[in-house]
Image 1 (cartoon, rainbow, N blue to C red):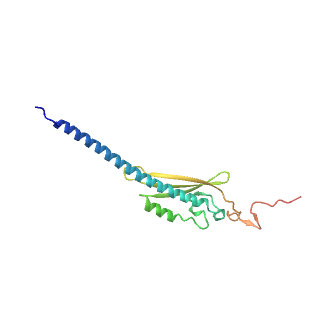
Image 2: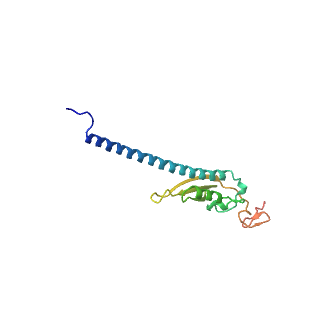
Image 3: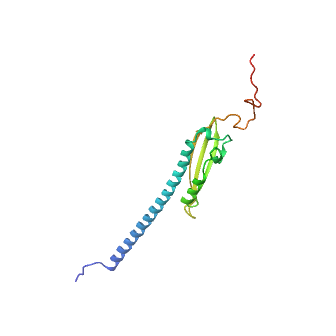
Length: 164
């Protein structure tokens, strides 16, 4: 007499196959969730960098303070460039978040402002960072603003040409 149904080996093989599929599915769900969180964090960092660079683009030239334009650029503005608000937002929003402001004078007459945001996704992953830059024209300053001694409107060391 022939019985209908499955043998123990067939049922065991089906259970093992279903378990393997369930493990693979859970791995993909976890990986996707992790990547979405990383992308969300990266987007937040990009938004903050872009925000700082957009604020720089609208600073009127008369707000710049004469200087060598090298290094941290937050002191190059008469009204001050409030970086504390951005720094605290980065620190609150990103795990171990840090922001670096940098400026470098480039020839002929420009300044490259670079903003870098870095954060850590955990102890096992390397530190991630996002950096963007903006090239702005170098503001023109009078000799007095640049720290050149001025006597009666003529910078010291420059002689007025005498007509002859």
